[in-house]
Image (tube, rainbow, N blue to C red; front, side, top):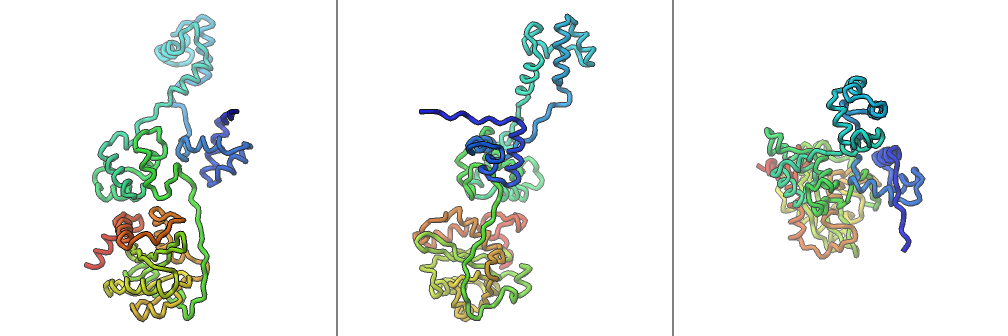
Length: 383
């Protein structure tokens, strides 16, 4: 079988590759910009560092420069002593002596080769923070198994150990320890616990969702009380349907003040089924948590009037093509794709299983809550 030659990049091309990657360009676009016939070479460079741009390398201020090594080579050829060469360079004689000795001695010394060897020898990365702190590494791995994000773990550690910097770590360090496997700190299997399950860092992209519907007597989100808009009072919810294969769905509800999540099993998408399931669940809530519900413009809430009669909860609808107006719910639906990937038949999940997934989300620290958990924030509200 005919093999394929490996694609090599010059340092300048690698620098351009990483700059384009950091600006959000995809692998194919980068390959075209660098005039590469296929993208495998670009992907190899990116994947080798987990999609994380390496820090630019610089020589230490006290290191010998190439021109100094050339002066050493000329001094050797002219028969000068080490002390005289060092004097001309304004260096210590021991520095010049070590330089010659580690590069083959006077008979074999070549300035360019010595410079290349020194550059290679300088690749001695320090052990990262997680490699040096076993307990910290164990706690990070424990939370990754629970499918916490690196940012949630970092924030939780700061709250748990505010006076102990040794038990704190940035989310970027966690990502590096996961994606740059040459560090050998966190097991590669833990990457599967991340929500995206990607093998390297990538630029974030946004998606929008259409799905309109003519809702009779729909109250606009612009009529929603100010206390719902500023999240000052609990009891205002955002809702939507999470879609799966074979026309299956799960209803998702997120409380705006606490970000508390509820998941509901619905037998079908028709408005009678959805409104009945929502009404049954919402009626179990304490009165102070039943104020309003904001929904997209899907026809599943066409029977919103009956929902309001049954629960005394007013329903407000987003503007057309504006799912961002229910930002908390959109974010939660994205998190839920970790447990319910697209193309999954959602009808096979019981309400008990949905409750367990909701509990897992509610016990995760949230950055927007100062790394409190939604469960803790809701508990404080109800006390």
